[in-house]
Length: 264
Length: 131
Image 1: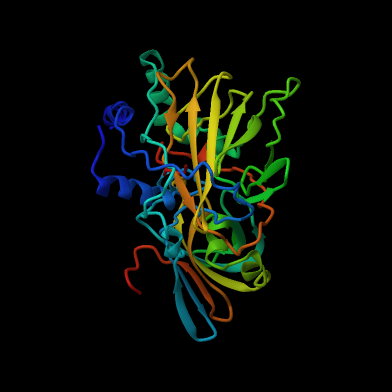
Image 2 (image 1 turned 60 degrees about the vertical axis):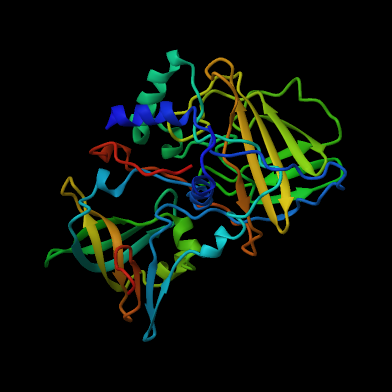
């Protein structure tokens, strides 16, 4: 099984599964990305809930309409692959981390996912000189302030989980350059470790009423070449942001095997 | 190499429902193929990540002992319209819990169904087909 997984990592690392689509018109005015955006379902997302109350019964399932727009052509999408391509000398470490994910993944133990693993923001507030990203995450509810007025990266910032961000507009696409990371995070759940040389480029744009988010990871210390993740199309949401419940992992000592399910 | 469009769309769609948080599988700690029924008094509800916990004084037989039952993540309940208060309103009342038993034999389970004293039911209905 482990051998199969390793082969899969190698194979997927070289297979392009996404093609570039026509970019949004660069003459377009700067769009407003502000809004509240859908979260992705939690663990066991496919499990329905049966609720019986007062003599009535209903089955509740997650809103499949969350898929709306996903299968449509999305202008501006960059070519992506399913997995990064690590330098050969780092593959054993990736394989080991992946195989032992339920014991080694910091996110399993309430760790911060960092960028890009946290994914697209849950809420965006767009101001003239900066854009603020808000998130809901079980490790806490981080925010990021992304200057868009030409300010450079901070020279005095400490390395952090979510890095130091600087944004710019390329036509109607917000491009965010993120750097100055700690090395504690994985940039993907399959043991995708990185060094403090990692840089992430996020691209966000509107596709109709939806938001599109796509990220590229580069770490020349461990990757053969930059890795562009599959894009995510996120629909607007009416659900208000809520403070995430505290995270207290209690099962680590009880694990009998390495079974786990994917997360992000 | 570029794959066919159908594959690209499948990958895209799969990612759209990718969970935002996750954990070990229930099979890493619990018996996925067994169920126990614990009857007792609900004493506490911890609405925490990565999984909620409920506590009750009761048992699978006549003995009354403290039990701990883990449930799906708060985000799963929230997405399906259930909040902590739906459980907490029953604190001090009798509940019947169906759960996967812990592999270590301790008084610990994974919540599949809870029936409250007034007959209300909340159930993780995976595998229940079209019911």
